[in-house]
Length: 339
Image 1 (cartoon, helix red, strand yellow):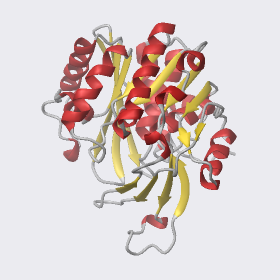
Image 2 (spheres, one colour):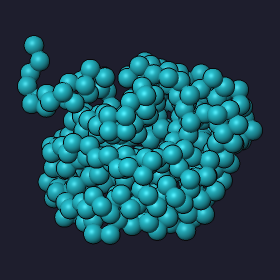
Image 3 (spheres, one colour):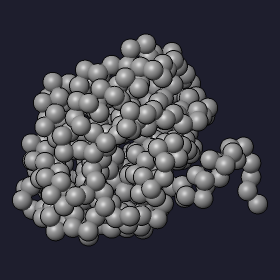
Image 4 (cartoon, helix red, strand yellow):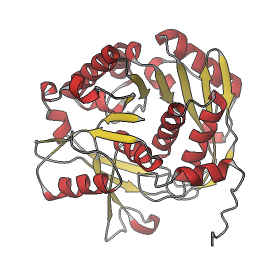
């Protein structure tokens, strides 16, 4: 399947050994960003994944592009220009101390792009799927316009579109998010969300869900998915369900709502190595398995298993192949040494 994603990729600087920012004397350098994470996962799963963004002409951006290319992502549509790559600093939590993210992305290359620089009809021709998240239109008016242009081209070409709502309070307010996303969602086929997105962006809340207490009410999430489907005429809604018992231990499962039917995946108990990018791994698993023409139940099982495994991998990218996901689906979740 040919898939194109559009968004920002950033330099990620992480404190080693779960140290606090005020005690670390070194930072570990990787790269990541929601749509780039999805593209990497899809490439590793065997899809033809293209990532579209804008990066400056410097050595850090070049290292990022080389890493993406080395992971199988088509980087030929990446624009070059602007002054800087966005940066985010991550202090990994443990036990009852939560993970902290600090952004330094103002004025990054993608925020100052000229939307007319991207020829979306030519770029999306022959594609099966286009994916973006709510982070991209939150970056700037220019990024929001480029997203609208992409969706119009995808709609005209008959390309399936998915959107992960991915609300980020450090980028915009709920009112701003609702105003912009309400214009984009009618051009979306499948919405991907988590336990907070629908409430923050559209005021649609899963009543009775208390993620901090590790409690999920399945019926309420079905209501959220049904409300999103009705509001925007969606083909389906996929929701990642996280139960946060602590920063180190989570419950994890997924829901796929389509044609009035709700399918819930198996539930996983996870000891967290790195939770950043888990939602993107869920989205990539959803897209990949949808392309295989599987049943809704098989699709959500694959997405949940893929994102379950992501929690065991340091960094944004889900470096997990299809055979490993299929093994987990087959019941091999022991974590035993493979010889």
